[in-house]
Image (cartoon, rainbow, N blue to C red; front, side):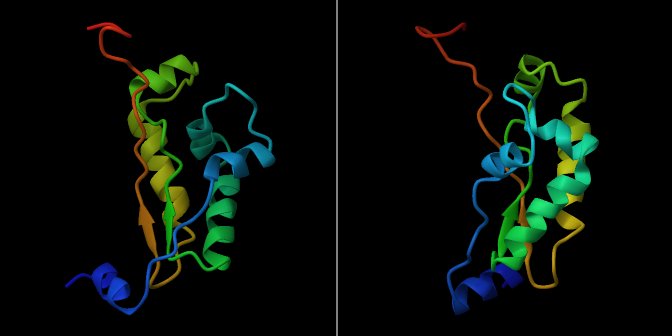
Length: 119
């Protein structure tokens, strides 16, 4: 049995909250790729993760929800998928207390299938 499964046997796991809204409060500009902060402002991303852990979260999600090629291109982000996602994992893991967890966050590409989008 994994450590996470052991935790769930004892109590429900408490997850973090809205990372995007926290980044906006910290100065993220509308239209800016939140994932770019993993490389440009990693200390700010880590600070937010730390706040969630200090508030009692058992799990924080990485700042990688839009970390796919389509979303990053749309936001004119100059970093690769690998760069933003690896940095996002490092930012969360750098402040993870013993016995707590980091979960990768993966969002949709933003593409629609026919009849709304391209095939």
